[in-house]
Length: 143
Image 1 (spheres, rainbow, N blue to C red):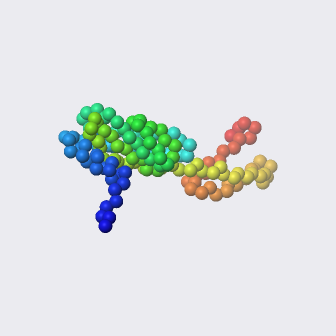
Image 2 (cartoon, one colour; image 1 turned 90 degrees about the horizontal axis):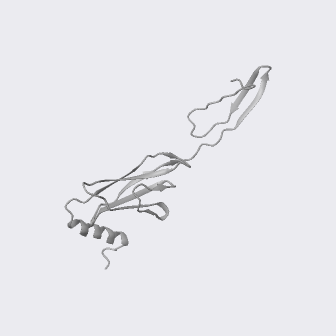
Image 3 (cartoon, helix red, strand yellow; image 1 turned 120 degrees about the vertical axis):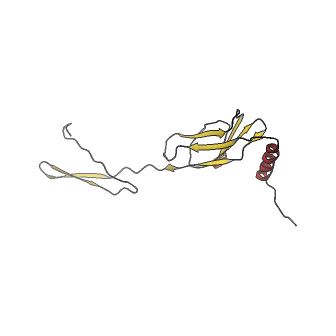
């Protein structure tokens, strides 16, 4: 009878537990980012740790098999990113940060027509998720 199924993740957490038995003060991973971002923005993860010594290793994992050993890596997509840090043989518990990316708004459809000699009418189609519209115009370079 199978009582518990071991996985790579289970073994990883058991190893962390064993290593941390010998650590007086294991580091605490503190991942973050500056979400939300707009589609196409450069997304930087921010790795920090609550620890009085020197962090020797940074390990980030994320969507679609993303991994990085940099403290503050650049990523390209939304999702949950997990940070684990170590100081020599002391390993932190993993902690995560959520990256949120908003799609760019569609370019509005703008139509114009003359309704009189000195009058122009602008009509804008509704833009989903837009909070306000801003319309500007100029005639012969004068606003």
